[in-house]
Length: 326
Image (cartoon, rainbow, N blue to C red; front, top):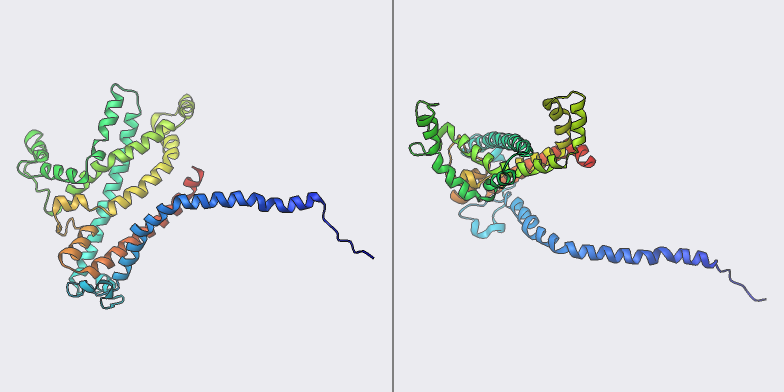
């Protein structure tokens, strides 16, 4: 008696083979996308991941003038560099580190505050109809276009006590001050680097906020004005909530920019600005390349990186909802 084999209907066979056939083009598209981003991933690994891993490894080494030639084969010190920085009060680098942390916090706070508030204020002004609006917007980009080196040199001359234009305006022209203050040394040196940093970052924040203001639906402001809301109430309840995602992005960029700022303080004040304006970056560069304490510099860099990672996590948690809605 002949055996018969049950065959599924043609519809079932085609339905079973359909996903595999449909999955092939999808996999091909995925591999094509992976191929496109592969150069960027390789570049990021070479430029960021490998140096970061090497820096973390060197922070656990006793790396100084005598062992630098051995580099990664230098003697292992474990957490000795971190203990000396954070807990060893007899270590002279201990007090300098916490002083630099405090100065970096003050510098970053005022730089971020001035950049965001000033950029938003300028964007609100440039968003109003006015003569020469395009020319003014173009000129406002000048501080952003000028390199940081040029910005630092220009402001260094402007802050000069005897011939600087700032003291001439404050003392000779307006008589706001009775004597010429010294800006590049002592307690005023912090403001000498904060103000140029704000001036340098204003155009970037202004462009961000101006784009957000121009994309904002004007019907909301018109309806609020009809209901009797004044300019301040419209700004508080309409403009600020709609600009919150842009403020979040600016807050992230500006804080990282301020914490890692090096060019302006270094060029204006040198590698040793003194206890009133010594930042984390100037401290790390001075101890690493002037005093040849490479292990200390690597450990301090790792601590700064960890602080920035914590800040990014806090920032993302605080603004997660705004970014998702956007």
